[in-house]
Length: 112
Length: 112
Image 1 (spheres, rainbow over the protein chains, first blue to last red):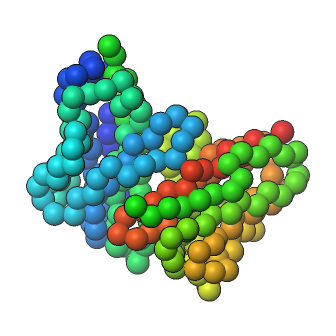
Image 2 (tube, rainbow over the protein chains, first blue to last red):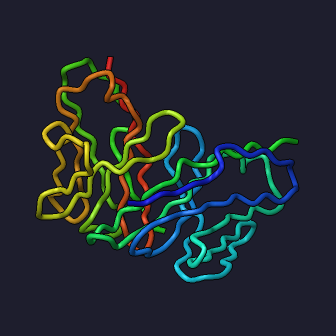
């Protein structure tokens, strides 16, 4: 099966940097995704890592280490609008499935 | 990015009735779409994989006779919740896959 762990809640200050960690266990790993989800809305795609290393996209960066089953999402220059849940999701090719398995999400609260 | 729409965005129905939710890929063709369910403060749980021209693949524990899926064309998948009960009240989200999954805006179902 698959197992994805991420912290339940985090708090950070406007303008600061926050790192949200995600560890996973899966067979047939085929990519790790980060999504942002505001309350009552659908998730929006942030980043995708399939090879080891850092992917940078504006204020958001995502890192992957496949050997460690570890990823993090880094948010810089935090803004109040970044308060949301951040979902780590893994895609596995096991049994031909292409769907994503989601972690429980990390609720980030950005404070003034 | 690709656009996925869902209709309706919100529905309230009486217990025992059936509700149909539509998921459309607006600017691309999707041979595969995914249906997720999200209960309050929980993460997305995959219900089924919708395959154009063939039967859907349901996740363990999801009743295929209760959650009917029809993927009649390359741009449309429908989920019908039959004989809905209050415990079916949830946020239903579809997604379609290109390289990454794009999510529809979700449908909030409330069963009275």
